[in-house]
Image 1 (tube, helix red, strand yellow):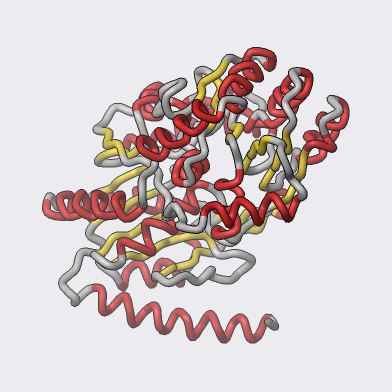
Image 2 (cartoon, one colour; image 1 turned 180 degrees about the horizontal axis):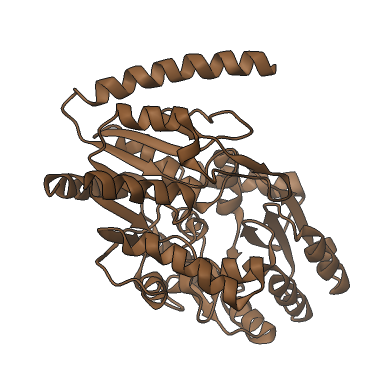
Length: 410
């Protein structure tokens, strides 16, 4: 699409948005404003949560998502999105809306709609815009705690002093909220450790996957497509970044190979540290046992990979509550985590997943014990499905009920 055509399309889109915002003010439903610093075409856990909630909750109430534009264009969804001018950071493939108040169109549309609840999924510039709205109008304000921000900041700036300053900014957003939503006990402990001192509500991540009736055929397709016969299939889904402990996965695979376990390791995802992973896999002589498949956006195809895997390897200490483990549980695929990781706190070792030592030999031993025992592995997967599988429809109903309660308190 030419630049001129894109501008015409944007103008037409916002004429429709303005009309819808007017309808929201008069249709008798509450209106929830969702503010996020991360949005399509970038895809991560936060974007997935926002998209799944917004697309479903509009069946119950009005919803407006305020998010960065991508290279000057608003990413359209099946719900109302108000784009905010953003700077495209090519090195990160990320659009940052640094100064929402400098966007006259965003400010104009924000004035057109009456928000009954504001919910921010980030503590940065767009999340701060939600805090500003809350302070101005007294609108109930919810923050969701998604990430271990201190680790992110420290890795990016490599300075204790700057990290301390940024975290002060981050926590001003959280402490400005009426309540914080987060996924589980350990993520709550993390945000409290950062200095949060208000109410906390547990709202887990979820999935829209449903275990398919033709599961066996899907598994057969994947195995035939890649020529996999009697090998065990291990899977990793996510960005290929060192924070996810991907080099430790390479160590685990090497130890499994030493122990005589025949396997194919499928890496789904891409990222800046892919080359480092490939180098380490080669050094450990397991590269030929692995397939780096890149990013897969087709969720139905991704479902086939989850189904086909014997086990998901996810030794990340970075994630707070990975949607990946819930998607795997939906397909009855158990996950192996590393000890003392936040994201593993909903798992019971040996019952619905594995929580293994930060030692490649011991981790490999734990995986081998279950993956070579058909009955143990099957029980682990069935229990993961029973205990860890949560649907977005369930989460949306609970979220809507809470929004109603908050709106009544205004």
